[in-house]
Image 1: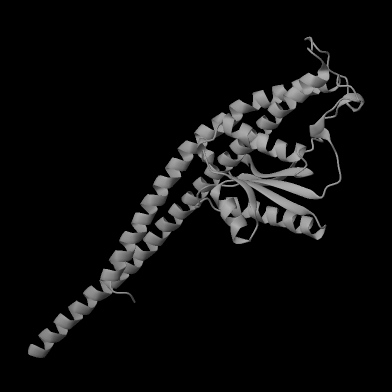
Image 2 (image 1 turned 45 degrees about the horizontal axis):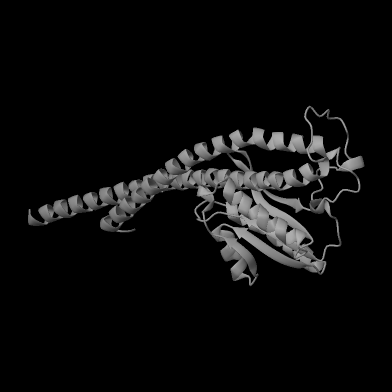
Length: 292
């Protein structure tokens, strides 16, 4: 059994760890509330711009030039990955990277080339360790300080890669926040756009209450980049919310485990201390008996 001095040191170390993880849990909780409120406030804007695009889509001529909807043979696939900059957030990054690895294996098996764009140091380090070349690593600002301008920069980069022919398809890998204890790794198509029908394929169920100038095709092509920016920013907010929620859960688990370990160590310490006292008493009694 460990001596009393060693046990006291272990109890003190575990108590310090519990204090640190408890503080990190509180910080993660405060950040989570702030980001979650921001993500919820952003939803109405996303819904509104999507509704506006759907209303205009039915008015676009079938022969109109809509490059972001251009379906072509897929030879090169672009993957945009959003991870955290820091660790200590449980399985948040590992689950997403596992999903990414599955997609990479599928694409390589089909003989397709892959190009990567990345936001978050953990994902970038993961790709670098496996020898993948990253086209662009978005460093500044960090994800927890990213704003809509950051999303616009990312969307412009991905749109340029698609329209220039550098890639034939773009997919995004992020984590969707569903609840305080559930975050879903998501592999979502980004370009070409398939979720919105255009021209004759669109259902003309929307009655326009505004005039379109100069024409529907021009307005539609101007709106689509704005829509893609909202998609990217929403993915960034969802990922950041999931990160803080996962870190909060991980730190809470670590704090609870440290508290349980501290209780167990105190029991062992008290037992060892009692044994030491009993042994000393027996030595005193034995010595007294020998003298008498």
